[in-house]
Image (cartoon, rainbow, N blue to C red; front, side, top):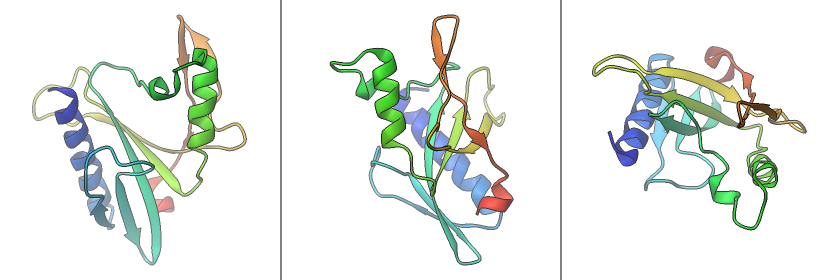
Length: 138
């Protein structure tokens, strides 16, 4: 899959999970819209869903914030931009998934003021989101 296909597959997979959980799902028109990709509603509760898909085992979340900043400054800028507690992040990982196998997925909400804890692991900066139960959130 190329990166466009990863994004489409990830959004479709998350939409299917949300529908199976009893949600009505709306897809935002146009690829790579800011802030969120899907809207899920259930029992009068509305949540924005930001879908992040990957096929290589990693997440390049702060790359767009790197220009003129150190990597850690770019991560801090990404964190500041994504502090909205009303957005649920859906991470879908296709790495090592065979054709017709379900990819790994995690639903998380950012925590503020420490949305993401930074720690260096093998030269990589990793993120820790608050894991959530989808049934309780939407």
